[in-house]
Length: 400
Image (cartoon, rainbow, N blue to C red; front, side, top):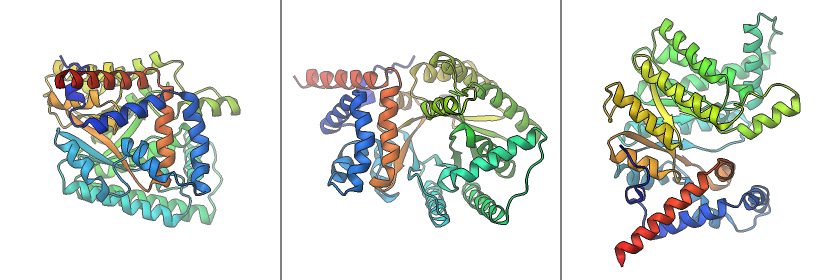
């Protein structure tokens, strides 16, 4: 039985300075009002050129990011690899709207794929559709797909829209083909519900093209949505009918507050689970469904929840699946839940960390969201702090 309370294993990669920085950072994140103030003040401070970029880089950026470029991430890749933990290079630049930016992002994503072929410590690549396509266009595509499924008549696209969608599909296929040709599994991240319909469909289209022989393309399923367990069951049947493998990155989700606010504002039923218990229940039910259907599904369980991580180890044991099965990965974010990542890896399970990278100013929205999520997820910050305090005390006793 794995113990996630073993802080000696959890923080064995951290020296005294690393440990103290993490402790202070989570202490600050534990103050919700301060985090809310930082979300407003930090972008303004950077915009008016206050000299805070260096401070950001030495603190929250260092905790949650691997560097500003792929080459900058080499130290993080090596450090994680020493403890049998893989790296998922995540280009975390957001908010672009121009085609030239989308093309540049697609090039960088393909660079991460190529980089993975040169290093056994990089088991996956990842990207967001909003990194290579305008949000409003993905929303339009989602609206049209939903209308089509209801049998509604669709207005024809304009010539410009036709060209824009052709460019999106070309970028998407270019990335997925690079993953297939280089035999690198690729996560397509989930996003907001009102654009997810198109992302789900386009991801499945790429699976039909590239998952005939192996699990190259992975869809991301957010279980904080109350419809996702039923969706996963329907995708299982679609995959069986198409005779393809279906890669699943299973997560709880990252847009809960935004989703509820939008549903309230526009007057439609919230797509979000009624409470955390319902999310946990469906997440664990999804794990059971996936392990039961391991002939179709390959899974990366992206979770900071100890119970769900333990459940997957138990399901694997009951199904006779070896700890080191490469079809059953665990993943956490860099800088968070090291007690889960390092203890699982120490027990022989396949584990990877999301390692975001990009210029400090452009990764800032990601960093502020990480801080905000730590304050909003019940017990996350206090759990991180308690483990850091425990390890500091353990080291002090060992030194005495």
